[in-house]
Image (cartoon, rainbow, N blue to C red; front, side, top):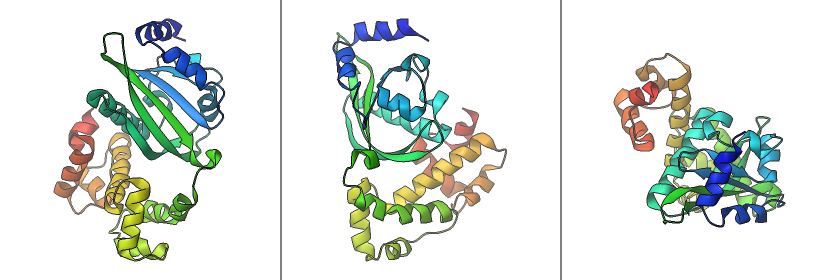
Amino acid sequence: MNVPLQQQFFKKVPGIEQTCRLFAHLPDVYLVVKDDEGRFIKHNQALLNWLKVDSDEELIGKTDFDIHPWDQAEAYQREDQRVMKSEEPLVDLVHPVTGGEGATSWFQVIKEPLFDKQRRVAGVVGMMRDYQRAGLAIAPYLEMQQVFDHIDDHFQREITVKELASLVELSTSQFQRRFRKLFNTSPASYINHVRIQSACRKLTSTTDTISHIAIQTGFYDHSHFSKVFKAYTGVSPTEYRRQ
């Protein structure tokens, strides 16, 4: 437990403690507050229940890497850094979150930068809504579930947009428009995202060569893999493994 860290943060960031109280009893809205080093400062009860944690004191001072799979933690940290560097919110992100028993749900995510009394960035606040529990318009997302399942099962090989569109009985142009509207990205970019996340896990959990990992995750060759990997993560596969 690191209560002094929490108390110091609340003194530094006006109003955030009161904001946390507003979210204390909402069952379908999940709140997390982090400082500029990515350390957890506060959660509401709904998120603690999802993570299967008894009290927020158990999480204070920890980071995403202490509680989430590496690839998810790295993605969350990258989003947080983007919010703090730009000093602009990220709105209507849609991504999976793994809970305390290994179950994964899709969440709508909003992240806002937090500022101290001198208007310097002090951290980030994130609010998430579980699409299923919140009763939001989930039907279009569920319609795409078989697309995500297909990508998860076959990302090691070439996947065409036509192939994915046929799963939901849409033309390729209709499918691409609907996919981008729902997830704010293209099917090709999402496929690369899945491949890169798989590559990240292999780079950190195996001793396979980078060329072998490139082929395993659906890339043409080492060069193509390295180019796409750096575009997504900001570092080369070799540097990622070293870090």
